[in-house]
Image 1 (cartoon, protein in one colour):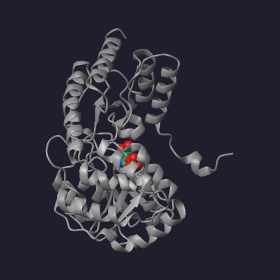
Image 2: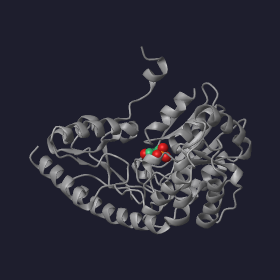
Image 3: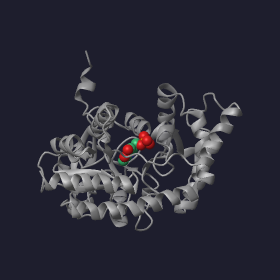
Length: 387
Ligand SMILES: Cc1ncc(COP(=O)(O)O)c(C=O)c1O
């Protein structure tokens, strides 16, 4: 029944594990969920208040397909304050989450068979977005010694005339690592010739900006005005369910995106857009509070993983993930994840979800309370000691 496209897409295994954990909970078992990339905080009050006001003020209809002007302007100000960048609001396009933004972007830039360079490992959905738009993902190893990030020299060697994009993600999922600014600069330089019509474009997924624990993270826009940034409100503002993201585009790509958004989503949710504006204006203290708490949990989880016998070599200094080496216990990360779920009642994401380069690794999320992290790691340690 299903079309060839859906048959060719890879399942999102972290979500499958999460769904199984939920089923186990429904049958009365208590599962500690360290598998999912979702803040355990609820959306800050100032954002919820703004959403309620927007609803009461009747801001409940479709908006401009590119987003409300106030939010586009607010984001331009955000880039000025956070990165010292001067961006025209016209280049900022609001989308229903960064996921949908990325999908529409690839629809806009890829012709059948065009290649997009993706790290191995990388966020599991990139490959599917590219495939859905008719392109082909080209995996370039991003090993633990390289901080699970793309190395500019390896990217240079992998470029072909058919390369249309290079995706970077810093802080990253699954590695939780930050790309050194000199590498981001070098990649921006490699892609600098890319245009709306041809050549590789640097696509920087900056969804985990604001969640870094060892200093400020650079935006790719600091190194090239011609790159594309995908970002959103989900992670740093704890707004995953509001489905709100944005793209920063070279001017020439705004009309094609406009056309796609008009047709495929009409607009991003209107109430979420007004809420997003309040997030930019008022939720700075909340994001700092949440980031400080993630930072504390990161150290606790890192210690507990090492104590339980997992390897944590790279420095997970951003997002809320640690990609831990589990090869002392397994060589099949999917089987091992199911084993930990069923036996220790802890859900984690299997490394293989993110590419063959993370096989033998498990991704632990610290978007969970200190109590749950400690209990989850106790359960795993005890289970492995008696295994
Ligand atoms: C690296 C990365 N990019 C994009 C997304 C999608 O975020 P959203 O669609 O909620 O903006 C995620 C979600 O986990 C992610 O980890």
